[in-house]
Image (cartoon, rainbow, N blue to C red):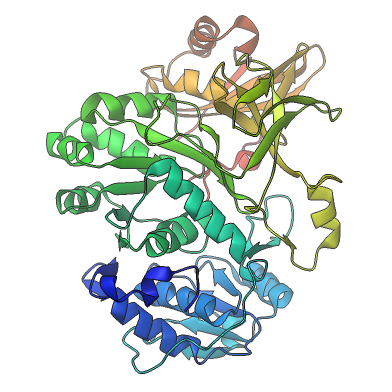
Length: 493
């Protein structure tokens, strides 16, 4: 079978639980039989689409495609017809794999449909001659600056990322992971499903995230929790009145947050209630995982750790000059003052191969010597830990001669007792170049804090030049499926 999943060919773990979704589960022996049988139907299929619902069928379908050496395209079931149509015409899959009974939209119904049998037997995965550079997945980006682009993820990227995380997190086959993440993106699918399977461990998917579900699984032996900041914020809110939840989270060996920055305020609330620090890591669709706080390290709120083994990382100025990087032993070189901002660039075996059918976009994303331009802006603390301050396009504010990251201002605002949520953007200013604009969801909409009060609060914690010049109050912030704030949807009147 595929070297991505050695446990599927190991008799010693055959009866060990591999996947559990609600009251449905598969052992490694059952998963090998079901995925093997499905893989036998995919030979020569080119690419295959997977209707990526949070179900056993999605996990079996993706494993089957990887066993068959066929690239899989996970489809977001919440995508609109136009987006689905673009993805399908761009990627040209020969069929779609779906759970029996799933109703597919018109754009998908045009494909040959194959229902996934999670209890398939008698089949074995076809003998495939696969190369580490062969494509494993085509994962489409969110398309915030145009139609979604298909990032081609090679098999080597999946293997190296998961093995590097195993090193950083001391992740073994004895770990039981719980999460409620969607399965059409890197976090939920590669880390959350393929990660445990590569280790020979178990994943319990909640179907729909809830504090009750997290507590139940952690009380029943789960050792790791993966989530996005929105999920951890909900846990932090629930901890105020739920001592049993605090005990449950305290039982976890590792709490991991990703896909966006976890506000410092939520870090501190969770740590105070549970005695556990949340570990953050940093990655992208095109690069998989780049950095992480190590399980044997000391998590510091706001940092995403240091580069993972095998990952080259540097911070670069607008003119291309390198602010700082890491030597062969992982030690930081260059500026580590916690203030000097540069764009993160990375290279290594964790990178994608290309944007499908977009050689122009692929070339624009890479430097001549193979560094990927992430578009994420960061500083490095004295020990070399990376602290992301925002996206170059939406979160880097140039005001009064300073380069200011929106993230640190958002964290400062969230420390105000009257602020529930906050986002920060920049807008043109004749004098400053750009002025800082805060978008705030108050805890009490009937009695929001004053704009001057919030500006002074930020100035005291950070610096006067980082104070918001404009404050808007909202009832909620626009977010995508992963909980990331959609800043392009925040418009001044």
